[in-house]
Image (tube, rainbow over all chains, first blue to last red; front, side, top):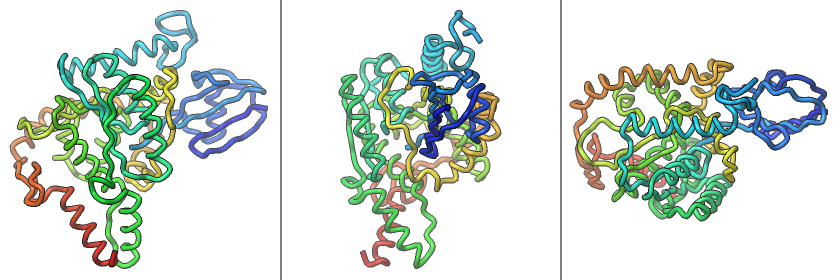
Length: 65
Length: 309
C-alpha cells in the first residue's frame, strides 16, 4: 500500500499504486502545479516512480499573508 | 532523467537539488541587479509573515547584505498568526536578525478577528462589503510604511504567482492606474514620500520557493491564511493554476514579462495624473482627501456605533 497525505485537505489515504507521482496526483485530483512532492521525507520530481510501501506527501505551495 | 548541469537526478526545472539552489539564488541576484533594487550599503527592512516566501527572502537578503532587519505585523488571526510568529521568532534568533513586531491591537485597538466579527454582525442588519483582505491590505500597508521609516528599502516576499494574479485581478477589475504601480520596484511617483518597496522573488514561483525552503530545511508553518478563500484573489489563483497545469511557469512568466514590457509606458502615462495630498485626519501622504486607513477607521467606527459596541 502507498501512504498518501494531501496537505491542502488534511487528508490521509492508503491505496494500491505503482507508477509515476504525476499520475497518482491526477488520479487523486491534485493539481501538480500547486504542490511539491515529498517521498519518504525527500522532496522529489513529479515524474519519480513510486511503489507500494512508499510514503508520499503532497505539500501545498499556497500560503497567504 | 539527468540534471542539465550534471549527472545527478532531476528535482525541478531540469535541475538537481544543488543546481536548483544555485539557479534560485542567481535569479534573486539577477532581479536585484537588473531592476536596481538594492544599493550595497542600503538599510533593508523585510516585511515578514513567517511563511515560506518572506522567510526565504529574509534569509537571502541577510545572506547577501549586512544591514537587514525583519518587520512583522501581527493582525491577530487566531490559530494562524500566533503560529507563524513563533516560527519567525525562532528563525530570527537562529540567524541573528533583529525582529520588530507591531500589532493591530496596539495600533488600532483591536485584532483583525474582532473587526471581521464586528462586520459580520453588522452584515446581518445592513450589507457592508468589506472583506478581510481589504482590511488587512489597508492596515498592513499603512503599518509597513510607518515602521519602514528610517530604512532605505522595504522588501516583501511577493512572488511570480502573487504578481501574475495581481496583474490579472487589476485587468479584470479595470484598475489600470493601480496596475501602473506594479513591478519588482513598486510605485510610480518620484517623490520620496514612502520607503521604496522591492520584490526580489518577483520571477520565482510559489512551487520553486517552497522547494527551496524545503531543501534549506527552514522550519516553517506551511499553511494558508484562513481568510484567503474569501478573497477574489483565490478565484483568480485557482483558475490560473488550472490553466498553468503542466506548463510549469510559462504562463505566469508570460503574464509578468508582457506586463513589464508595457509598464514603463503605463508608469509614464499615470505619473502626472497622481496628485499627492496629505490626509486631512492623520496627515500622511495620499492621493485622496482622506487616506484609505482613516476612511476604513471611520467605517469601522460607524459600524461600532450602529451595533452599539
